[in-house]
Image (tube, rainbow, N blue to C red; front, side, top):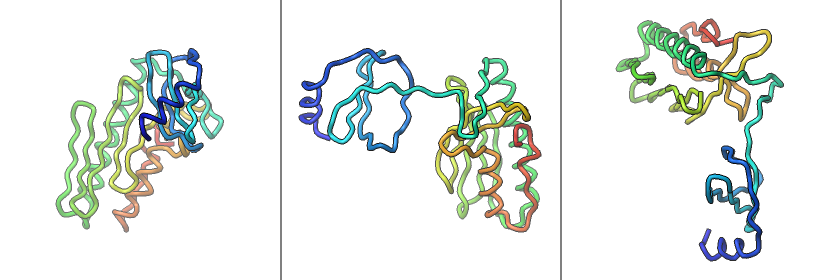
Length: 192
C-alpha cells in the first residue's frame, strides 16, 4: 500500500485513544496494522483507515476459561511440558525404524527435534513474556499455544485460532511420519 493512500486516509480520520493491547490477524480484509504510539493503533482495511481495539479474551472456542498464569505456575507447567515432550521424542526416535539421521536436543527452554532431511525439524520453545509455548512444525508451520485450564482437566496448551491442542497436533503429524509405531501424546502432562 502506498504512503500516499495512507496519508489521504489519515487526513480523513480523527485519532482516538485505544487501550494498548495486542493485535490479532482478522479475516475481514485487514491489510495493515501499525502502532502509532503506546496507545494508538491504525488499521487500513479495504482502503479505509480505521482505529480498532484488539484484545484477547479469556474464553476459547470450547467455552472454557483461560487460567491466569502467574510466572511461577507458567515456569512449572512449561518445564513439565517440555521435559515430558523431550523424553517422549527421544523414546519415539529410539524406537523408529524409518528415521535415519534424527536427533533430539533440549536446552534453555528450546526443544529441537530433527527427523532427518525427509521430514524436517520441529522446534518447540517457551515464550516467557507471552506465557506461551511456540511450536514450529515442518508440516503445518508456526503456532503459538496458550495454557488453558478447564474444570475437568489440569489444563492444556491450546492454539486459539482453531482450538486444537499442541499434543493433538503432534499426535496427528507424527502418526503420519512414524507409521506403524504406537504414539500417544495424550498420556503426557497437559496432553488431555
